[in-house]
Length: 119
Image 1 (cartoon, rainbow, N blue to C red):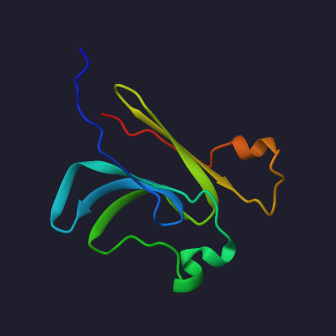
Image 2 (image 1 turned 180 degrees about the horizontal axis):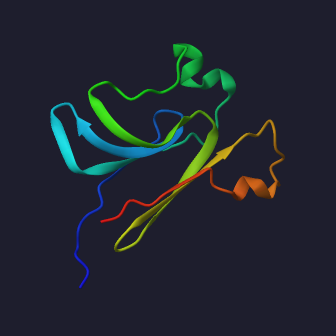
């Protein structure tokens, strides 16, 4: 019989980046199972709008948070597809460089990263 255990997942689109990992600690709080964390990516932005343009550095993990990084933050246009099943979650992340590829290029359909957190 399958055990009904939730799969902790956080999806954020606020950082203008694609990325993923498992959060193991936040401050003094140790997360025994971890929380899958996904940066879903910006649908569109120009090079001048990436946060690193203004900050001079890309997205970094705060020192009070421990993350098992699966894909480092990537400042590219893109999107994330999350499929939710009874016993697992499937995450596929797609990055698009509109300046380098025509829109009809089939390589746009290949994910740059896959992650499958489980219960």
